[in-house]
Image 1 (cartoon, rainbow, N blue to C red):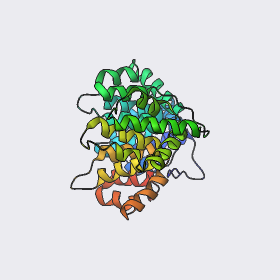
Image 2: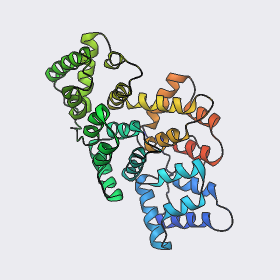
Image 3: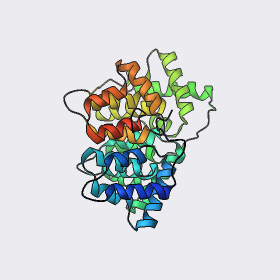
Length: 316
């Protein structure tokens, strides 16, 4: 499901570090060389390159990349070079800042990462910012949104495929009762969404659809402009059909007069090693346009080349 293309014969981390150091030498920066290396290395390989670079040159590769590069190309290379948990911690911290505050990014990270990955994000956040992720989320949010987001970021769900159909039926009924009563932030509703395994949730929501005739997200559109309800629907989509969530995020980032480069960069950087192939398939199915063509038509230069390389269509 990943789109990352790694060559059969990968140079050693020390060799890659040497080539990257050469890319920074002289008056100009060799962006082509940077893309040819970093866009074709796994997370473990990128980590080893950073270590080799530090040991050999006494410098932080991330700092040198940020100093040498600029604009959207700088951001995609920076995010991509971070370890996945570091990257998510960085994105989550940005999402709690005043000017870049974004509850959707917090929800996205909490709902689309595995329990072990989310735990690693919380550890990375603690190490990097000397406070807990849940502490910042609780401080920066309020009301129903806080009530939903805090348990989402602290969740540690069962990851197996075993489900209880009896539980699915009873909890589908409970969800229906709460939604009918417009108790959208009820403790039981939030408990079900923030504690049950993704397999169990899928069984519950499938039963909800079959029993009551509507997908749950359709019944949660009683007020389409309510921010909490929009976030709740997004969480359900992330938990049960992440490829649909990310397809929509990419579609909204690309369509229209301007491009939302932050959203485009985030999705490509976080999903290229996870499920970008599935997202691409759904994007084509939904839009009748290949994702690489959509990106090429909306971006340019080294930023475009890096994005295309990460989704498996670059010529690098």
